[in-house]
Length: 187
Image (cartoon, rainbow, N blue to C red):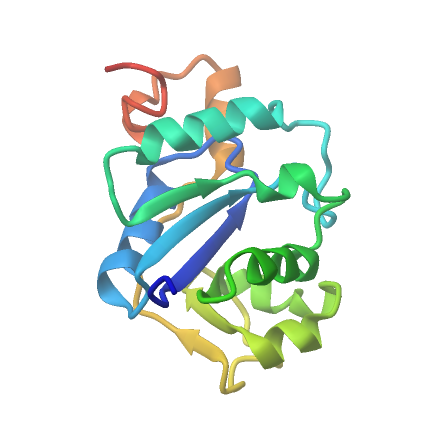
């Protein structure tokens, strides 16, 4: 039987992946009890609009390029093969079935806790999985802050968003340092 691992699931559109995503994931890989971080590329977050998303295979490819040299990172396209829109509870059930010997946890920005009650079957997720929370600027307290499966971390606050990146690209700004050269396909 394979060894048990603690896997942190970093769900996101990664539209595009940038140094903020990578730094946060690196923090969780090095400063928590998680053995690996899996970047779960979401085809469509049901709480967000789909219109500005790059094609899922392009986003998955960029994630793979960005993380390929770090053994504690893995990418996952599992949600590409599940019904859409993607619901975390369905993905977790599928992962648990496929990898019964792994222990999964979710990585979330603190701002996501305030809308966590909108997630499908959020009570089941809270009961069965740990939520590792990274701080976000201007986040307000939530009803879940004191839950025993909610673990706050001291991850550095990085105020870079994919929206900022997309807008800067539209404005033809030179933002090459917000990416890894590999995620842009430059070797």
